[in-house]
Amino acid sequence: MHRLRSPGGCPWDAEQTHASLVKYLLEEAYETADAIEDGDDAALREELGDVLLQVVFHSRIAAERPDGWTIDDVAGDIVEKLIRRHPHVFGSASAATASDVEANWEQLKAVEKGRTSAVDGVPIGQPALALASALLGRTAKAGLDVPVTSSVEVPTTVDDESVGELLLAVVALARSGGMQLTDLLASAERLNQTGLAEASAQLYEHWIAGTESPHRHIACFNWGTVLGALRRPQEAERAYRQALQDLALPYDENLVMRTESFSESEGARGLARLLDAKARFTAVLAGNDLHALGCYDVFNERGVNCPDDISLVGFNDMPIVDKLSPALTTVHVPQYEIGTEAARLLLDRVNNVGGPAKTVHLSLDLVVRSSTAEPRASAGSRSRRAAVSRPVG
Image 1 (cartoon, one colour):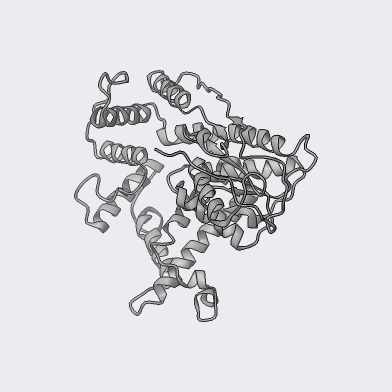
Image 2 (cartoon, helix red, strand yellow; image 1 turned 90 degrees about the vertical axis):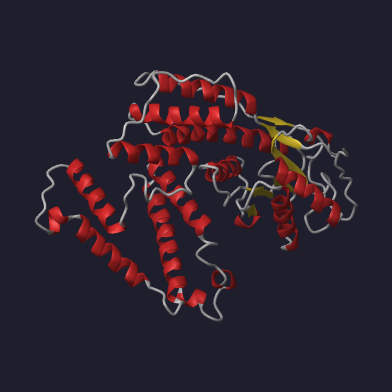
C-alpha cells in the first residue's frame, strides 16, 4: 500500500479518500456475507482479505496526515478495547452467560461513549429496515415498551405516513417472532438469482444457438458498485459467468463494466470506456434499460450501428423501450407481480409466526426485438452510421 500511494505508484490508489472508499467497504462487506451464506470457505478467505485491504487502505490515508494514525494504532486500539470490554476475562468482573457478557458490554460502551439515550450511536446511514430493527432492538434492551399490533394489514390510504407505520409494524412483528426482516428480504432477493440465470440462459441461447455466426465476446454491465441493491450485483455477475461457462464462451474481465449507478449516463460511460479501450466485443448486456438508453446515445455519437456492429440487450422492459429505433431487446421483469407477491408473503409470514415459509417463483423472460442480431462486424471495424433514434415527446 505504501508503494501504491507513493509517487510513481498507482494513480487510482493515490487519489482515493476515506469518502471515496466507503462504497467499496460496503460492497466487500456484502460479498463477505455472501460467502458465509453460500458456505464457500475459499471465497470467505478471499473476501476477508478484501475487507482487510480496506482497513489497510484507510489506515494508510490517515497516516499521510500530520495528525494521523497508522494500522498499528488501529490494531492497538482494538486490543485495548477487547481487554476493557471483557473484564470477566481480564479483570475481576463476573459474567456466567453470554447474556451477561452482552449486558456488561453495552454498559461499558455507554460509559465510554458518554451516551445518555438508548438509541445513541445507532448508525443512521444504514438501510431503512435495518435502521428500524436496530432502533427497536435498542429500545427493547433499555426496557422501553414498543407496542406491536397483533396483525398487519395494508392501509386504506396509501401515503408516506401510513406506509412508514406499516413498515415499522412489520419490523416489530418480525422481531417479536425472532426474525430479522432484513434477512428475510435478503433471502427473497437471493431467490431472484435463479431468475437472472434463466434470463441469461435465454439471452445466450438467442445470441448463440442456431446461428451461423454466434456472438462470442459479450460485454456486461454488472452494477458492481451500486449501493443499496442488496446482493444483486454479485448475483448478476454469477449468472453472467455461469451462462458463459455453460456455452463454452470465454470470460473476459475487461468486458465487465462495474457501474456507479443505474443511470443513463453510467450506461453511456461504460460503453464509451469499452470503445475507447478498443475492446473486442460484438454484444452488450446492459445492467438495466437506463444503461441501454445511454448506449443508444453513444451509438449515435460514435457512428456505431445497432445491431449490425453491436447487439444490445437491456433489463426491466421499461414501457418506452419498444418505441426506440431499433426497438430494445430486453429482459422483462414482472415488477407488479413481484411487488404484489412480496407483500402477500411478507404479511403472511409476520401474521403466522412459526408457520412454514412459502416461496413464489416468477419467471423473467427475454423479449426479443430488433436491437439484437448475429454479429456482422468486429468491434474495431465500424463503418456505417448508426440508425438509432429515441421517441419524441
